[in-house]
Image 1: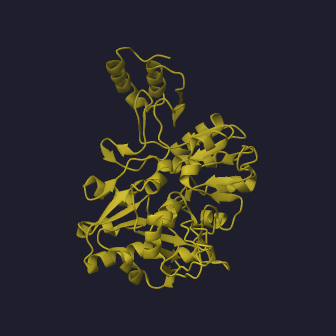
Image 2 (image 1 turned 45 degrees about the vertical axis):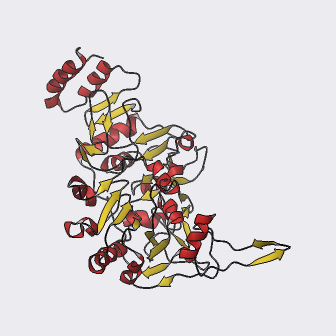
Image 3 (image 1 turned 90 degrees about the vertical axis):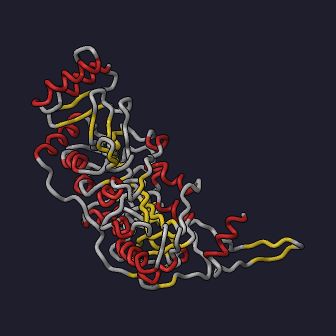
Length: 432
C-alpha cells in the first residue's frame, strides 16, 4: 500500500477521494486504480505540444515507447530533441519493435539515451551491434512480466491513441502487446492523440484521465507490406497452404513475406481461424471471401485474436471499430494453455537459419542479434521446414533422417557440401 500511496501523491495529486465515516473507520469510494479502463475522477490531461510534454522526463529516468504501427513518432522526435537541448543524462528508452528513425540511438545521443529493446527492429540493429544500445532476449509473452515483477520500472510512457469518445475513452489501437503492463506501472503517461489510429476492441481501452499530457497530431501510421510476393515466396506459400493447412485450422502467423504468401494461397480453404500475436493485410481477402470465419474455434469463437499490427492502411481501416477483431495482451495471446485450446493450431513463421538437425534461429545471424524471440522454435518443436524445393517432415525423425530431409529441400548446388558436413558431424551418411 505504501508504494501505491507514494505513486498517487507523485502522479495523481489532483485525484479526489470521497468517503463516509462509520465510527473510527472511513471508507473511500474513489481510490486510485492503475487499470487503464478505470476513469479517474476529476482529472484531465494537459493538452500541450510534444516538446513541452517532454519536460516530464528527468535524468536517470526509464521511458517506455509503444511500438509497431502505434509508435508515437512525433513524441519520439520531441524526446530526442529535448534530450539534446536540456542536459538530460542516463535515460533508458525501452520498447519492442518500433518504427521510424530512432534518433535517440545515434552517436550524438551517447550518454543521453540508451535503447533497451525487448524485440529488435531495423532501426536499432546497428547501435546494438556497435554496443551503444542493449537488447533483452525474451519471449513475447514474458515481456509484461518485466513490468509486473518490477525488473523494468518505467517513469514515463509515450503512447499513441485514438481520440477520446463521448465517455473519454481512447484506444491504444494497433499495439496492445506489453503496453497495458507498461502503462499500469508508469508514473507519467504522454499520449499522442491521432485520428488516424484505429479504435480497436479487446484490452485496448484507456480513459483519458490517465494521461498526464496529451498531444494532438494527424499523421499516417507507418506501413509495411503490400508488395507482390516473389516467385520463390509464392512457391513456399503454396507448399504450405496446399499440404500443411487443413480446413478449420487456427493460424498463428509471424511477420514477413512468407506468412503473407501463405495467406495469399489459402483462398480455397474453409472455416479458418486466427489466434496470433500479429496478422497482416493478407487476411482481409480471406475474411471477405469467407475463408476465415473463426467458427471452429473453441474459445473466442467468431473472433480474430491479435496483440499488435503492422501493415497497410487497408489493414488499419479494416480493424478500425471492427468488433470481430480483439486486440489482447501478449501474455494472453501467446499463452500456451490458451493456444492449445484452439483446433488444428498451425503456426507459420519465417526463420533466418536452420541447421541440419532442425534447430531454428529466428532472432540472430551468427553472434549478431537481428530481431527477437516471438515464436521461437527448438529442433524438438519444429514439425516441418518448407522451402521452394519442398517440405521436410521432421517430427519423429532421427538426426540422420532430419539431415537427409533438410538436404533434399536445400538449393541443389549446396546439397553435396551439406552431405559432407552432415557426415562429419554425425559420422554416418544422412538417410531416410
